[in-house]
Image (cartoon, rainbow, N blue to C red; front, side):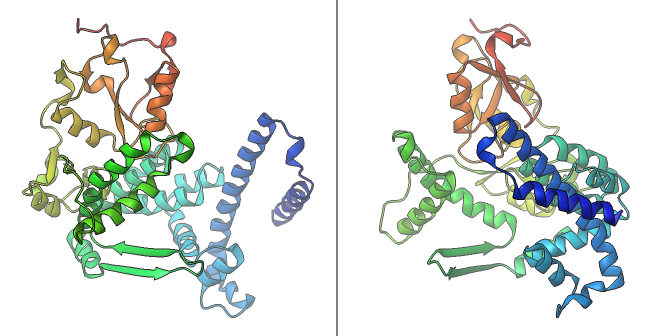
Length: 398
């Protein structure tokens, strides 16, 4: 087997050395990229499988002056020490997760996906198959959110873990060699989520101003977020006026069973769009006017219909709870989402949950510019021409 791998590496080396991308048409280039992506996944799989034996035999110590297997792996892989440790963790966990190992061997999982599945499925083995399905169909953010939920629900010491994070809270500021200023903020997710929510009014001002500019002058959402942080700092020191207040709040989703004060496997307790939190923290947050709590098994929002174009508060909250990111398959954008009527309101589309979708600005404009409709479930929806779309029921509004 090692000889076959050696031959494959040599053939791949020759193929890449002789590759002239300028002679490829678009379809051939796209197919080649997809094949190289599979090669990367298979390479990561082989590395994770073989490194288990390297660690067991301590053969890494024969390759130089390395402290441990992780520093050796980081050196030979050209990756960070954190990435190397993640590979070693995955390798250790695969022995108890045969379905994950099979998916990795088949080239179906990236290194990141394998690490996330292995960590979550180790915490709750019953979730392994569902997480592997999520890895196949969901964008990376959605997939990682699912893994985080599984891990959080299975954690028996959630408050101890929360307190550990709280004690380690910190803000660091430094300058990179190229002159880039950097800030690292870490702490409990409910606290960092409050900071991000406080940026929203400033981001909204900047975003609305940017919409009137030429497309070539528009900037990334991350750039708007940075400018919003600076604007918020200026407002706090009186350099500029505060942003206009909005009805921005944090939305906490908590399954009704978690009202006992902790989560069981399969239950969800999280800040929507941010991540899991201990149920005890969620219950404390629910007493704050800044927080909206969504208790599942509560109001049947699916039956709420509004005659106007703008969804009422209960529908907006439900949309944020069900879809904290753009619902188009593969799109992980979660900021500045716009609510779209799948069947346009002007054509009789109802303002009900089944006809509403949060979309990023790009996909919202794309849908209307090309007269499209959305089909699919959850955050795995795709566009189809309006003429080919089968409307689930006729519009009721006249």
